[in-house]
Image (cartoon, rainbow over all chains, first blue to last red; front, side, top):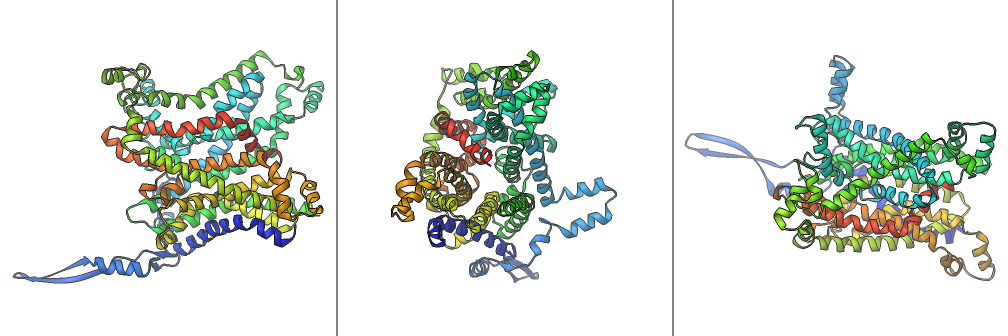
Length: 342
Length: 293
C-alpha cells in the first residue's frame, strides 16, 4: 500500500490517539513540574485601645487573580517528585540512617503514601496474575472434561464475573462481606467473633481486594485456555498415551507446552490490567488500608482542591512502572520481528 | 479427541466436576443473591440475625405486606433520577462504539495491508498506549479541558473514550483483516478500483463478523468505564457507573442503600443480555489475539 493511501486510512485513528493519549502524556509531564500557587497572604494591623495586633489573612481576590493568570501554578522542577507524598527522598534517607533493622525500615517506608500504594499495587499484580493463570487452567481442564451439552451454560456463567463493570462487581462483593451481609455475618458466626470485620484490618482488606481481583480476572484466563485446549492435536495426545504416558504426564508434557504461548499472552494482558487496579478499591471502600497508584492519582484529582501537580507526578511514576513492566515484552517482540525480517 | 484418550479415573472425574461446580457457585452466586435481595427491604438484605431472612423476606412482609418489593427500583429510577444516567450511558456508549469502529476499521485495514516497517511500530505504539492506566491520562486531560471549557460535556467523554479504545480496536481489527485474503481486494484494484473503492465494495461486505466482535468489546469498555466518566462529566451529564458510586455517598446515611442495590442490578441487566446473545462472539474475540498469535 502506498504511503499516501496508508496515511489517509490511518489518519482518524492516529489523530485520536495522538490528541488524546500522546498529548495528555505530554501535558502530564509539564503539569508534574509545577505546583499550585500558595495563597496570597496580607498582613493587616488593627489598632485598638490595648495596642496594635497584626493578623495575616488570605487575600482571596489576589489569590484568585494569580491562579487565573497562571493556571499551571508556579514552577517547581522535580520538587513534587521528591516531596513527602511521592518519592520522599528526605524521609527515606532519614529512615535508612536511623532504622533499627530491616523490619523497622520497611514499616517506616509503609507510612509514606507513595510507597504504601506502590507496595499494594505490586503485591496485587504479582499475586493475582499467577493465581489467575493457574485457576484459569484448572477450570479450563475441568470444563473440557464435561459433556459437550453442559459446556455452553458453564461458559455463560463463567463470563459473568469478567464482564460485569468492575465497580459494580466490587460493590456486590462489598455488600456481601458487610458485617450484616451474608458472607460477613457467616464468617463472624464461624469465627465466633462478633467484631470480626473484613474492612477493618489491613491484612484482611488486602486479601479481600486480591480475592476480588482473582474472581474478576480468572474467567479471561479460563476462556483463552479453554479455546487453546480445543486446538491441542489429538494425534499427539494419543501418541503420548500409546507410549505409556499417564494422564498427568500428558498434561505436563503435551498440553502445558502447547499452552505456553497462550500463557504468555494472558500474562501480558493480566500484568497491564492488574497494574492499574483502581475500581475495586473504590467499590470495596478499601482506601484506608489498601491504596493503589491509580487510586492515589484519583484521590488527588477528586479532592476539594484538585492537586494537579501531585497527580501528574504520581502519573509519571506510574507510567514509568508500566514501561518497566512492558520492556521485556517489547524487547522480545523486537527480536522476533528482526528474526522474521532476516 | 478419541474416547480412549479421554477416559479417566473416577476420582479425577469427581475432582474436576467438584472443581467446576465450585467455580460456578463462586461465579454466579453473588449475582443471584444481589438480584434476589434487590427486591427486599434493607432489613432483610442486610440481616445480621439470620441470612435466611433475605430468602423468606421476613421484614419485607412486615413492612410492605408482600414478600417482594420494588421500592429500591422506584427510589433509584424515579426519586433519584437514575433514568437520566441510563440515558446518558446509552448516548455515550452508542456514539463511542460507532466512532471507534469507523476509525478502527479504516486504520486496522491499512495496518493489515501495509508491509512497511512503520506499520509494525504503530502497532507497538498502540500496545504501549493500551497499557496506560486510564486515570493517568485523565490527570492530563483535566487542566486543559477546564481551561478550554470542554469539561463536563458528553461529546468530550465520547471522544476520549474513542481514543482510549483505539489501540485495542486497531489490534483486533488488524488481526481480522489479516485473515481476509489479500487477493480479494487486490483483484478489485486490478479491475480498476481505487484502494478506497475496493475497501468499500469488497472488504466492507465481508468484514461484519470481525467488526461485531470488536464492537462488543468497545461497548464493554465504554459501558464499564469509571475513571473517565467519573472525572470528565459534570453532575447533570453523569452516566450510570459514576452515579452508582455517588449514590453510596448520599444514601448510606438515609438508610437507602437499597437504591444503590437496585441501580446495580439495573446496570448489570444489559450485560447479562449481551452475554446471552453474543456469547460465541465474546469467546472468539477473547481468543482471537491469542490463538492466532
